[in-house]
Length: 396
Image (tube, rainbow, N blue to C red; front, side, top):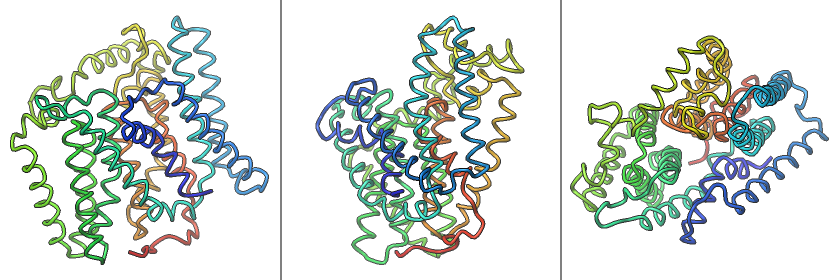
């Protein structure tokens, strides 16, 4: 399977949004074009899976059989909820998202191989530059002289923020490891632009993700490689870029600045009502949860707690949360293994997953976040034994 297609699907929503930004079109996830776009991607994934089944390449591995069985059981759980739920419309909407985003991501994750993962970093170049340029355009399309870039709202600002926080590690690694002065300058610029646009977009989770990845990258590539001068250049360049646009942090970056407001509801962008409702549901149904739609019934439409662990608790209870955490053990062991490698692709993929987890702690639903499922299945099925790509640094 092509590493390039793996990346295209991983960033599929961002690419779609980027194309619309360049064309100055509005991003609507429920539009007919968006539906056809995802059906097309799903068909490619099906073809890839069928080819691997015909070739018999790792199809009947125990881990993959377990995942397929679990997926079937979860679909059965959906059907059972239809018989007991008083909100069939909400359940139908959720099932549509699950079939449209989760299942294709799981199938693709089952078909990724070590050789594909090892080439992700070098295949990322063109996707990276396209997304950065398109999101610059999107940000300026939404610029308002009074509110600056803060007119970007809802799913759009989150998509911009979390996409750029996912791209930041790629650009920063290229910056600190490239030998060419031209490449260093290019990736210094793109790294700073990522941080700059995340701040302007107001994505708090994206900001937190960049902070976490910066700490790791600083330790692995800057301090360890004695490249502290490069990091200082990055800080100075980013600061100058921000100051050239606007000196007033509290005005331009007001969404980010509310993180330090001291008020939980303000800092969490009004998430208090979602969290309080989640705790109320958990108090009523602590052991096995309230099912897929009970939480949404409080709001009269489909919604979620905006936190992956609270979402698992409300649906499956403490028993479900315990099982969920146990299932995360293997992926997180692989994650730790990836972060120790010199292979840039492994490190980049690990930071992509961390970025997705940060997003789900702040917002979104794990039930149909395709990046979460693609990453978690890939990490779960990855085999470290005799991996030819481990501890191999890529050409800089």
